[in-house]
Image (cartoon, rainbow, N blue to C red):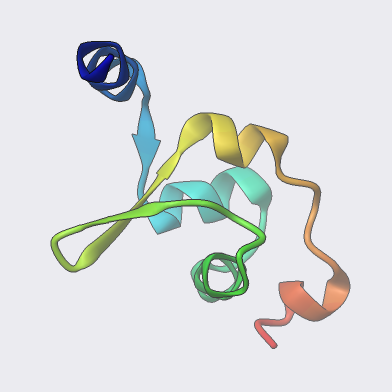
Length: 70
């Protein structure tokens, strides 16, 4: 079963927080806020965040409060 999970992980495209911010049309800070609140799923690779591209596509547009980085 693990080999299937590994194949899925290998085929998943990951975005940096800046790439996710550009896609969502928000600031990078907002992406970090969405990650910390659990509204956006991602994983840490060392000290850096990586966000599955599919997660960014399925995320609803952030509220105006989240757009302001609050």
